[in-house]
Image 1 (tube, rainbow, N blue to C red):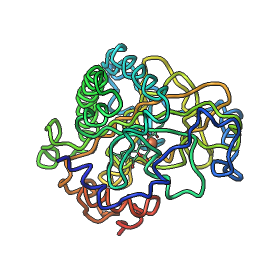
Image 2 (cartoon, rainbow, N blue to C red; image 1 turned 120 degrees about the vertical axis):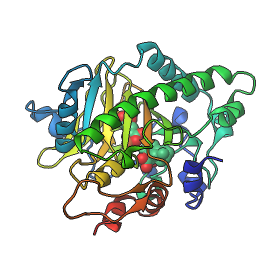
Image 3 (cartoon, rainbow, N blue to C red; image 1 turned 180 degrees about the vertical axis):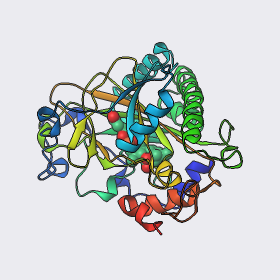
Image 4 (cartoon, rainbow, N blue to C red; image 1 turned 60 degrees about the horizontal axis):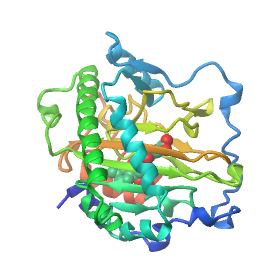
Length: 341
Ligand SMILES: C=C1C[C@]23C[C@H]1CC[C@H]2[C@@]12CCC[C@@](C)(C(=O)O1)[C@H]2[C@@H]3C(=O)O
Ligand SMILES: O=C(O)CCC(=O)C(=O)O
Ligand SMILES: [Fe+2]
């Protein structure tokens, strides 16, 4: 039993919010996928050359302070010299391509169940939006073998080995980032005992954004914040990810080779008593290129009590990770205001 999956059981989705469109046969944009007034490609990007999300070198002696500053200002940064071998990331991207290139009926064999959390399907946040996204996902929590076996009965081992290795390597990096961030906040030994433990909550999400006949009316992934402490993201070399910055609008996060994107999630926003922002982000699509990304979501154990650890006046009440996941699953964008004091 995996408790992160358990937390989602109480919030089943209707099948229409799980089964993706068959994009391979979509020659035009169906009304169900046409977003009014969204013009996602007409953003702050083109106009402003001034500032974009910082690129931080993990080997830089000042990395800790730079990360703190980026989390305060943007809720995100790009990370180079992160220690994850290039081949490990490349292999996972190849596996994602191999998976999403399969015929629809093959992928549907691993369709997420209504009360389930893992497998193939639309983004979990679909029910909160009036239109569907130009996106397919594959969620891994715990061992991927149960779902991978349904797709490749005789040939699932390579996929599983690569995904499990990726997750293991991401965890090492995430533990290291957590130590740095907790040092910045002067968090006590008592409150950080879980860092490095094996019972943390983690998930891997493979994302696929097919090329789109009408990219200006479509949405790859709708605006959201992540339900994690933080998220480490690999994006293929195609622009599409954007972060919302007050006063600036949607700022593109352009891909750089060998560089990972880190997003502050809701849980770090709470623990830092809103010192670190959790950035609203979204993904646009384009007419020519398919885009892939691999997100690693990292959170404390499910029974860990999340509460502002640096404060004079706490801005949020205490919740366990599990409770917060439930609140978010039910209330999405209102979740943080539900626990505001
Ligand atoms: C561990 C997680 C984190 C999840 C839910 C669950 C598994 C899949 C993740 C995503 C991945 C795609 C965006 C998102 C918003 C979604 O729809 O599914 C994410 C969500 C969250 O950050 O809340
Ligand atoms: O595809 C991307 O660049 C972002 C994906 C994302 O935001 C997510 O999986 O939560
Ligand atoms: Fe996200």
